[in-house]
Image (cartoon, rainbow, N blue to C red):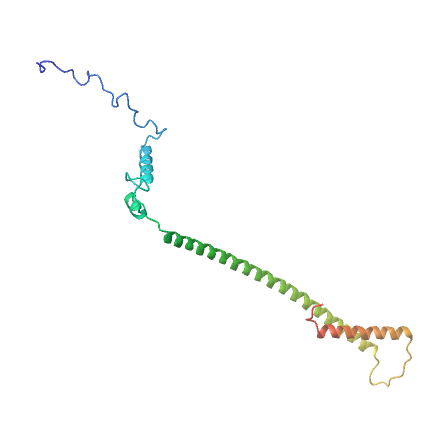
Length: 184
């Protein structure tokens, strides 16, 4: 007689809960992640923790077998040492480039200083040459014509002091011009 009992149509039937009352609904801990990225993050965390396998780290005594079972790359001390050497080489290259740049900058500054110093020395030489020419011109003006006979002239003490000063100035000037490269 079970057939005789009619079942109410689907619209009149009471709706059943999709999740039983003793379970937490889906997305309860997602905190606003409606796109399901919370489930992806949980799966990613599970893969990172165990490499996607149910075996914990250190399950095998052999580290290579343990890494292979978990799906993780086995890193040997030799590999770590090679990576370390690569990073050291890279750091040394960067440091060498910085030193080269600093040396180039120092060379440029030194060249500028030398050029400035050379210009100063050339200016000094040109001033000394002008002074020498002036002294020669003054001396030529003071000396009488060579054609006329020279009369012995009696000089006073002040004139002799002036002549000796001029002679010493000329000597100093000659010394400077001959040895203009010497640093004093």
